[in-house]
Length: 286
Image 1 (cartoon, rainbow, N blue to C red):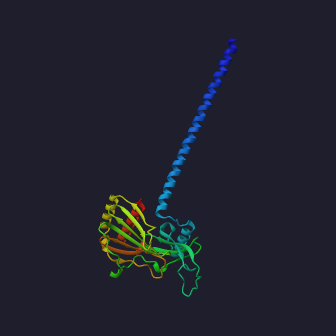
Image 2: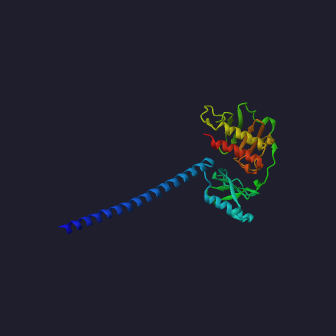
């Protein structure tokens, strides 16, 4: 009887020990799975956050086949290594003919609208502007626009916008483009950023967002450091033959300057910096 009881207890203890070991293994495995799941979730959140930030800057991404086609063509033309080139800007466009608005002499162009892209490539010294269709299977280099600098012209007094009110720090008027609409955006000293469409009788497109007063003051100091006032009443025109471009008229308390989206990357460096600082205000506004 004693031997039977001893064997029973030994067997039972072995079972309990085995159960404990299996439970420990399952706990470790479960913990590992939870850790992996948490890590994957964190990575996904980070990637999603990055995507949102990118979308705030450029809502429509340039398709990779279009980018590759442009870089290959410029490499072939200029003999520049692809790794030395960078796409510094792009915008969706609708070209008014099958020649992408860049016809060759005596070339007949179909008059159908062609959705596509305007792509700006740079090697740090020179910029190249391309017109493409949606996929990059058709593209043309805008050789007339291939200028490293732009010569400004004086804005006629009759075409200058009215001066700013005392409580307004900065104003942007954008006009043109395919839609042909005009928008006005003003930054007030209290941080309000107000955007309206000129000619909107019901004021239905008005938006009001905010940045901090500190950000407004930082922007004002940046305008002073970039010597924005030295561009007073100057216009940087679009290249000859360009179409459907957007003209931006920027006004501070010191004066007005005008440029367009096609020539933006050929502006003087100080003015480019001021434009970038203004665009960052628009991105940060909530």
